[in-house]
Length: 361
Image (cartoon, rainbow, N blue to C red; front, top):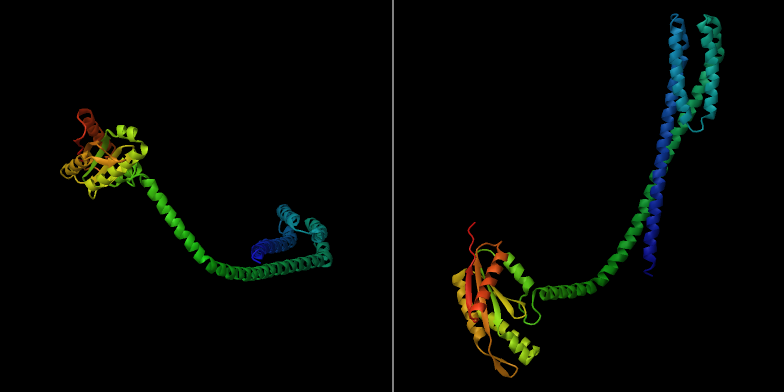
């Protein structure tokens, strides 16, 4: 029955999205109604201003011109509002009728016929204005009611949606918690297995598979992390190739494993690295006084015969020694140790040479 839960969650999300859209739409409707009510209120104010203009024409000869300009500005603003109002047909008709009556009254006042204008004011203008004001008030009340209804519906749909979502999420969490407890043991076993595999991969990435010594990659990290005076011994086996060619690669591998063991013994607490083939390295703390005895032990130990492939073989070791007190001098340290080792190989083999790389900064 677990296949139902993703569908339940999807349905809950769809419902929540639909209600969110509806909520946004309803709030939009509420704002629209409030905007319409605000425009109706502004229109009502403009009509009141317009109705008070006609008696300004009696003030002086120049007043009718000013009144006409003000009247034109007011009616332009009224038209802008009417163009934005939805379903403004009825109110537009009433305003046009009101304007027609008001224009007649203003015309009479403009020619000094005050009595006739007053009669029209009482019989036509005021009743038309009252009807118009009542219509505007009803429209405003209707927009306010619609805005409030839209707000209430939006809030109600949001509350219902949140309640439904919380119930669905609660059920899902309960289901997931049960599944989580059931799978904890399996996950723990998988994590332990993964950790073991990662440890194995890290070990293999930093160690030589044949001898178990650290590899060239590990040497780079060792030199980069070294602090204070430290020494590097590069060890190259002498006459290893003839042994490998004569007795075979299996015997050569056996010899390399035996060499690795003797290098560990000679190096003591220092780290022994196989660089590849018959090349090794030793990284140790300290300067030349601490490193020279190690180099001597390496040359002596490797020079002792090996029992390999049912016979005794002899090889030697050429060692180049370099020391430094600069933690950022790995490249130069390697180069100096390599040069020292090759000086040994070119001269007599089976010994060591020292090249100090001391930097004062």
